[in-house]
Amino acid sequence: MRTRTLLLSILFTGCLVPTSSSSPPSSPSSPSGPPQPDPPTSAQPITYDEPGYATIDVSVTGEPVGNLDVFYDQLDSYGVWYDDPTYGWAFSPSQASYVPYSNGYWKYTDYGLLWVSKDPFGWATDHYGRWVYQNRWVWTPDLTWGPAWVSWRQGDTSIGWAPAGYTVDAYVPDDHWRFVPSTALLAIDLSGRYLTDDHHAYLRASVPTVRYHVHDDVVWVAGPSEDWMRRNRLDLQRARADAMELGRFDAQRRADAERRAHERQREWDQRNAREVQIRRDLDQRVRDQRDEQRRRATAQQQLADDRRRQDAQRTQLEAQQRTAREAAARATSDVERHRLQEQDRKLAAQRTALDDARRQAQQAQLARQREEQQRRDESAQRQQLEQDRVKAAQQQRLDEQRRKTAEAEAEAEADQQRVRDGDQRKADETRKAADDQKRAADDQRKQQDEQRKQQDDQRKQADQRKQQDDQQRKAAADAKRATDAQRAQQNDEQRKAADDAKRAADAQRKQQADQRQQQDDQRRQATADAKRATDEQRKQQDDQQRKAADDQQRATEAQRKQQADQRKQQDDHQRKVADDRQRATEAQRKQQDAQRKQQDAQKRRAAEDRKKAASDKQPPPRP
Image (tube, rainbow, N blue to C red; front, side, top):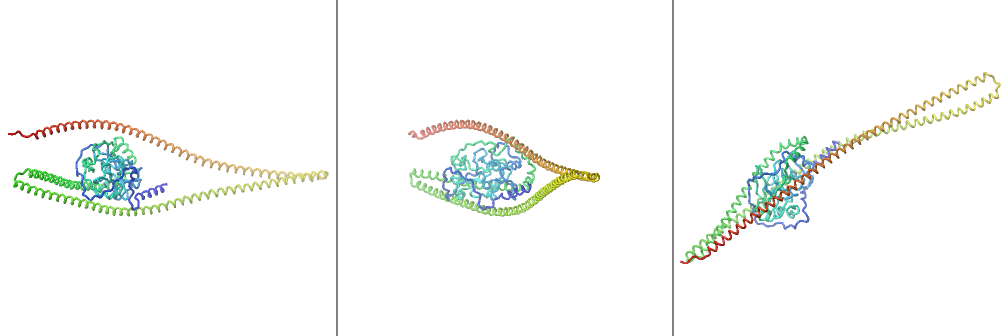
């Protein structure tokens, strides 16, 4: 049994990474979703969203996971844990084509854009650790919490995201990016709105979103800004998120999870030792990623400042040109008109220079975007080569595992053959014993036949003796006058023959009684053996039935406990929903009151502005 279990575990572990060179299929989109627009083809420069690297101060609801053993225990039934040479112990979901951050939706909260997963293990894998692509997606755990560990890209009419990995240019297959129309970002049914026509076109027509939040020395990817959301008519009202949506625990649930993990502590000791070895390299990767994010944010901030400065200069020149044209229209002398025209030419030259500078900046931005796309393509090629190398190494390990599996199977087959040979020997011995019993029974039957034959001979002898007695009586009657000596001699011979016959009959009866006693002993022995086998079998059945009853009772108790927990969670959720609805109503009423006050203030200011304009339009009094 242990050998069979070892073989199954080796085979299953060897099949973790598919050997096919094609990328795993992406999650299917809903056929009932809205029609998809044509992929973007514009070659115009794409405007970056306002960059940022800002510190935020918020209190995160719930308790974080405090021990990696909790992940090992809670995710164990949804996939396989295996030791990766680069990332240590990694989790591989049961579905080989699984794509992270696909089954869920975005919620706008105090922490930024929060991914609410619909996967049973998404509470852990989408808020802790990182996803890396190893010819399929695998998850490496750590204890740092975040709203979502993704990278963002913005286009003119679309927005997309993908797992972030441990570098800013972590490899992601093109068809594993999730793009949606900009106006659908906060939709609940995101899976039916994914743009799947041409992923490469959406990647080419988009740029990275360089916005980050720093919270307690942890860098979160912030996603698009509020200005971007306003431009795309998205609801900016921040929503509340409970602990389950955040991937965090309440105190009781955390204690239960840690207790369960502690019960399996021996299983995790080796994994934790491996994590200590690999964690230094992963922490360094995270620090490098944070430095690169800060560098990119600074560079994009400089670009944004240059763009705002150019816009301010352009606005100032336009105001000066309008002032110059108005002054030229009011000029009364040729000298003043000539001076104003000269000033207008200078302003036009400055505006031309500013337009040239703006055009050069746009060309430089296009060049940077092309360079960024080229770097991304080169990085993708390098990552693909690395994936091919990893795939070759995995194939080599798989071949080695298959060889070991074949050897283990051969050894197991040899063990099974030895068991079969032993069973065959036992069967031969049993058959031989049965044959011996059959031969003994045949011998008994032959002996009984001989005894019956002897009895027939004795009856014949008795008949012959009776005939002889009749003859003797006839002879005696005929020779009544024979001598007494001859009669006495015949009587002695008859008594002697009768004694011999009696002794032979007694010996024969004794032999038959011994044979019956031997047969009875054999039957009693066979009955006792059969009874012992029946008792042993009945005992095994009783043990199995008791074990099945105990298992069923434990399963019933676990199900009852789970149902009670679910009812409690549903009651808590309903209370939270009612509280949230009440708070939302109060907030909406306050917001409406503030809007009415603001409208009243605007009306008062407009009335004052009209009075002031009316007073300005009155002609001055004549002297």
